[in-house]
Length: 339
Image 1 (cartoon, rainbow, N blue to C red):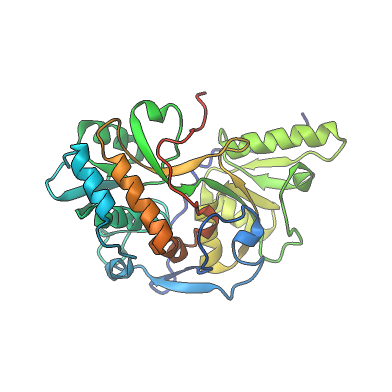
Image 2: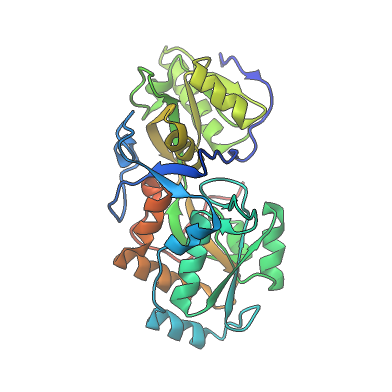
């Protein structure tokens, strides 16, 4: 397979440094609810900056979180389940606050948790009639924290997998979406299928599902006599971002949420295509609890109430995640297959 892999390292988990401009961060505001098309039209029009708005990144941001009244059916389901919170009357929700716009610390106190995942944690607690107590933890530590009962719930960009379902219950609230991003003045307007990447140089993380997608597409292209894709690997995200902005590479392919955030902040890149993160399977992001503790059914009721009544869409609008919207929250759907 003719691939020029100038491997300089590995992009770790799609992480991106929080970029703050004058104390605020720009994001998308597109409106609409329910299931969105997983194509460029699902986000801002290519190169369009008219939808950019600014958000307060200080601790006062929490005052703008969408709220929901306790959902009677969810409260009743929680009571009937026999679930006992780690702290009475409180929902302790764990987050890993290291990636904008999903989770990060407020710039004024460096302790208040902000981002879409904290918004969802607050919303779920409200709907259950419980007080929201956020806790920060390293990504590697949340599984044991849930199993031990230290935390009640996680909302931190967790993808549902069959292996994780052995130990945890899940209620979905976003699709796991990958995005192709190019320089804002690039002639590339759409990447949807294998032939669209023929001959392009694309930054991708080593060992990721997005790399698997590109390798499969490349094999298809080579078999069809098309030019191979030039996979590029970078040691850190900042270097990869600079590479696409400077034109040294044609595109990046990775988690949409973080790439959309960067595009919203500086307008130097644009979205040209989306793929589900589990392609060819479907990957979904979900709130997680310890297996069999009874909490997840009530969480699912709250999420579906929020989807129906608009609070769900309001959270996605706050953080530019409209392309990741789902129409219905499901309990323990089919997850990504075991490796």
